[in-house]
Every structure is written in structure tokens, then in C-alpha cells.
Length: 269
Image (cartoon, rainbow, N blue to C red; front, side, top):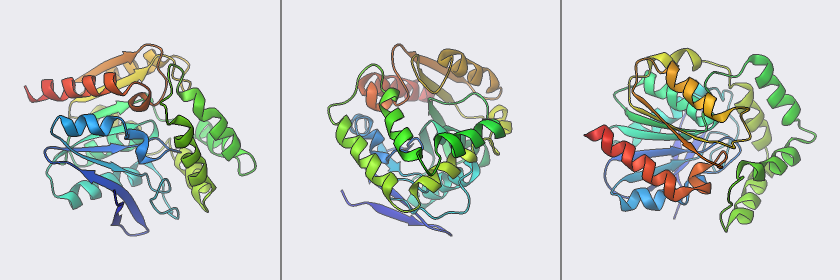
């Protein structure tokens, strides 16, 4: 499949566009590729959806030199792509740091977003200190790439797909490209900004999916349920995957697809 690109003010956003039907926009975690959704996409296509997977700004095949990596900037990319596709409203599926941007987008343009699926989402914005520590200590220019790629397998505690090693090699190769680690540092350094106050304003249906062994959280189940409690204006559903980690759509794709499709069906009823 040939990669498509959306040109914006400072760069380009890479995406794949497949299928016909209601639009589903899938956005991966920071430090990963849109192929994170390679197992979920065929199941959504088989169910009759148009599935678009996009790389975050600075990651994958999107350009790497942007001045802003905040949730509002990434959320504006999502909305720009939805408008560009001219397919009406979209269900946004976001993972990890992409969930903050999805929340921002749903409040910014509720007429373009029909619902949210938030995978491995934080309940609150990271503090400035935590964001600084993540960006400048864990992702230090000296050891960040090695530390991040060593941590990557821990996000799959229950099972790894057969192509896990090949996928990780692609992630490593991407992060070796000029500007990629800088972009990842800036993405996490901006994680405290401009979305937390919007949680209570989300008005579309929300599905929160969390692995019980997600290494990013001390108490994953509590994190998911606290986020649901903060969604004051939205109907929120929480699903916990026992034994799973951070990338549910690659670790447990069949279960993930079933729950997403059930959520969409109930939302239409």
C-alpha cells in the first residue's frame, strides 16, 4: 500500500486509507508506528468501516521537524485529516499519548468526532515535573533511544505477535532517523498541556480500554476508572483486559476488535 500524505503548515502527516463506510481514524502511541494497528485494521474493514491509520507528527513517516507537539497540535492534525477525507464524522481510536489529543479534538470539533476509543489513557495530564523527567531523563539524547527500545517489550506482558521482532526493528530504525528522538522528547514534554481541562467537556460516547499489567501505570484499573469518572458530560464504558499491557490492539487484537465493534453497535442503537 502506498503511503498518503497530508500537507499542513509546518510539515506532512503520513496515513493509510482503506475500505468504505463510516470513518474510523486510528492514531498510535508515541514512539510507535501506525502499523501498531496492523491486526485491528482488517477486522474493522471486514465489519464495513473505512479505516485510516495516521502517524503522529514527528513519528513514523510523518515529517520530524515541528515546533509544537502538544495535544492541541496533534489533535489539530486529527481534525485536519478528518476534514481532508471529507467523510463526515469519525470514530477516533487513540493509544497512550494520542488519547490526550483525541480528547482535545472531540471537544474542539464535536461535529467531526462521533466517539472516542481511548487505549491505555492517563486519567490526568502529567505534571510538568513528570513530563520533564520523561523527556529529559528517560529519553535523554545520550541513552534515550536504547532505554526506550529496551522498555518497549515490557508493554506486551501477556503475548507478543509473531512479527514483534520485525516491528521493533522498524521502530528502532525510525528512531534512528534525524529528528525522531527530539520529536519524541518534545511529544512527552508537552503531555501536561491543554487537554486536562477538556475531559469534563467531552460530549461524545467514550470507550476506555486498559490492560491490567500496563507497565506505564502503578494501578491501571484505577487509572481507567478515574478517567471515566472525570468524563462528566459523556457516557463512558471501561473495559479491563486481564494480563495485558499497553498496546492492546496488537497484544489482544481479536478481543480488542470485538469490544470496539460492540461499543459502536450499542452507540448506534
